[in-house]
Amino acid sequence: MKVGIPIAGFMDWGGGIDFLRIILKGLNAVQENHNLQLVILAPEAKELSYLEKFKLQIKKTINYLSNSNRFTTSIPKHDIQQVKITLSKEARFEFLLYPNSKKDLIQICKHKNIEVLAPSYFNLGSSFPIPWVGYIPDFQHKYYPAFFSAKELRIREKIFVNYLSEAKTIVVNAKAVKNDITKYYGDVKAEIFSLPFCPLYNSSEQLKGVDISKFKLPENYFLISNQFWKHKDHATAFKALAEFIKQNKNEVHLVCTGSMSDYRFPDYINYLKQLIVDLGIEKNLHLLGYILKEEQQEIMLRSKALIQPTLFEGGPGGGSVYEALALGVPVLMSDIPVNKEINNPLAYFFIAGNENSLAAKMLELLNVEHMDRNSFKENQLKETLALGEMILSAIKQQMKND
Image (cartoon, rainbow, N blue to C red; front, side):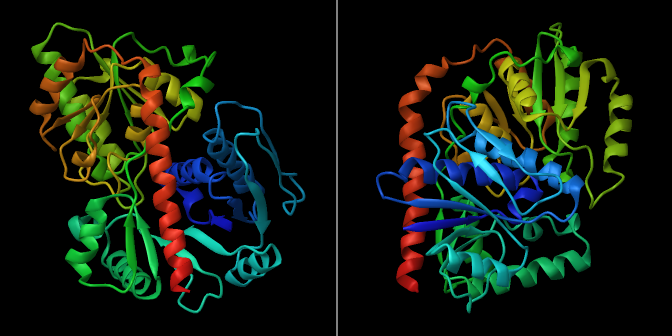
């Protein structure tokens, strides 16, 4: 079976890139047993600045497909039609670049004999001539409508209603998302597959020699690796840090990576900066912004634990939790239902939105040693294969439907 993985939409946001990595990892694991041919389909970039960013994202994505760095990507600056990707033998993907339209996607699929697309971020429609498996990230607008403008709420709702009526098969990140579909939209025609939790394994082997000295980080620190979106709830973590400093003699810092903006709340970052001053934690807080993935992971490896204070996620924990657990780094996360789907000895929970609960857990985890990464190897294969088989089940179901 020749499977196309259309990456349009996923490559435009951090969570989408992480989800794509997980999908590629799962499909790569079952590729040989099921005789799959896997083709990554990428839309052309029209601007050189975007093209360079796109190339970097592709590199980051392919990085997760094997233990080695034996691959290269080359996208000529003045000829975006040509893309060459040489992968290590463990990762077998063809890569094709096509003009960014549905018509062009159809043409390249027919030309390359691609039998099914999975997963698609965009609704390709009920009349699309090639079987396709859809993807819905979450229903955040149902839980936190105040995080969206009236126009965004209307658009988002229309997109999901159309998606659920036109797609025959859909994958989601968690059982909680599958339950939300029934809760908010009743019985739908589409068959829904919830993907099992599967951390992005093997990345730690690629981090040898990564230099993070330029960040001048202290010895004892916790890490948050989230974009500064309002629902990620950095504020609770900042308040918890202040509470921790007040109650304990231990010198502890908090490091934050991720884009420092929220397009829905442009003033939110200014609110957080003022909160930092009001709490008096400037010396113990390090805002690094958006940094290289290998640097972010090295910082994660050296942290006491990852903190995930989020109020809402479409998948258990969000991308940073997947990474941390794969690296053997403890995770301290909010106890929202979707996060509680994670059953892992390194996963700890605090009461969502409660800085006192978080501060207490930070003290508890301060002296926890990281688990030996070698102990994860047995579970790595099981979880990755389970993920790949579930994606393949969705693909086979869609093939039956068509």
